[in-house]
Amino acid sequence: ATINFTDFEGQTRTVDATVGDSVMETAVRNGVTGIVGECGGSLSCATCHVFVAPEDFESLDPMGEMEDEMLYGTAVDREENSRLSCQIKMCEGQTLNVATPETQV
Ligand code: FES
Image (cartoon, rainbow, N blue to C red):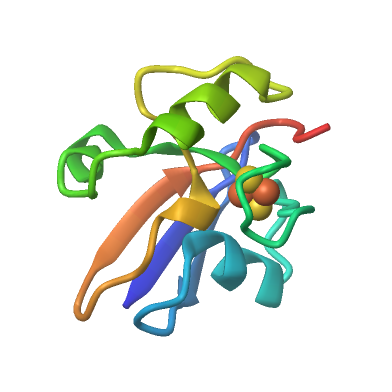
């Protein structure tokens, strides 16, 4: 699986992702700028906020209620295509395009 991370300045970095890992874990392991993941994926920090490309957004599993609530506490305001990247697990053959916010804190 592959993830293209685009930072707030428009720089894109392509990273190989292990199937079953979350987008947040993949970002942290590869030192991707713009994702912190402070709580380690337990839905309590909202520092893993990303904007999913509209063409990819629909293909994701719908977000849970907790994630939806946490998205009101992000450093950069949520948009229609906001998700918490610790809740997105990579699937076989999947390519995901996400943009990272300017700050997570
Ligand atoms: Fe904390 Fe996603 S890593 S909510």
